[in-house]
Image 1: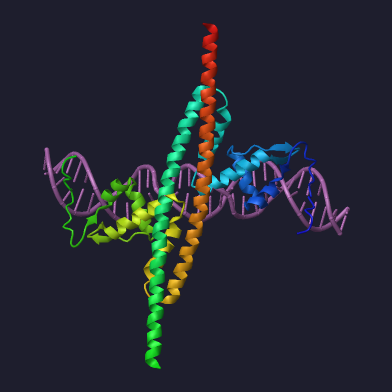
Image 2 (image 1 turned 180 degrees about the vertical axis):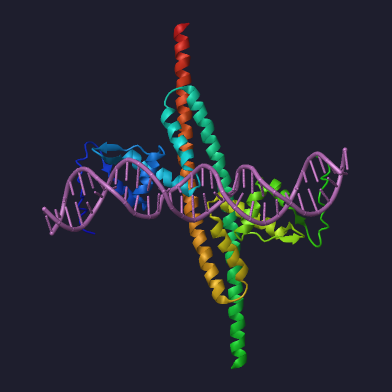
Length: 149
Length: 149
DNA sequence: TTTGCCGTTTACGTCCACGTCAACTATTTT
DNA sequence: AAAATAGTTGACGTGGACGTAAACGGCAAA
């Protein structure tokens, strides 16, 4: 690792910023993907001239997006969640609605946790059973060798 | 619930069987979906004439498929898993390979569990914070009323 | 017999999440 | 000045997981 000779040394006017390439490398996704997320309203980087400038907030969102994806949420769902979060600073009505949505998401996650643990159990049973079979085979092979000697 | 006047009373020659419609209702999916899974090699019902007959094995697989989907596995992945499971009755080489695949899946699930619990934590923080805001608002509203009286 | 209902195959359509050029701009390195 | 590197928009392509319609067969109740 040599010094990170930043080809576009942004003067960073207040707070850390990232280029699209930096984020792509950090999270191991393509720049296309990042632009697509912006297209879908999930990210809103500022601009330095024509180029996109991502701040820590965008980076945090990106992290959330990727985790959400691994959990099977769609981009649209996450966009709604973000929008809700942004709007929910104020009116009680909004806050109550937001709470109900959170509760809904929680139910989803609980279901998923059940699925996951059930799958984990079955997987470990398969694993154990498979190992048993292997050990048995090795014993039999040992027997055969002793017979032959 | 009246008696389930089965319109096509299969004589069930050995073991419980299901029609495609029964399974669709039970799991709340369309028959199209079930046929599609067969197309992709995930199910292999027998036939009674032209119609499909599903046995308990197929039903169990269907359950696995749906759970797998909720966890983000692709149909292709699950097909491979099933194929592997079917072939892994014998040769030690196969068994070892199967074990390695199981280990891989386990890693996937572990990652997913981390994601899930991290998300759950953040969600509950959001929930709590949101409730705080609401309570504060209500206190303020109470103050305002007392001021006015 | 006709009406319903369930089932069948074949084929094309759709939505999501990007991939893949193409053509261009801007800056840095040689 | 030329080449390399990173970025831009725009448009079309793709793979996965089905939806949707068309046209048909078989059986059961009215």
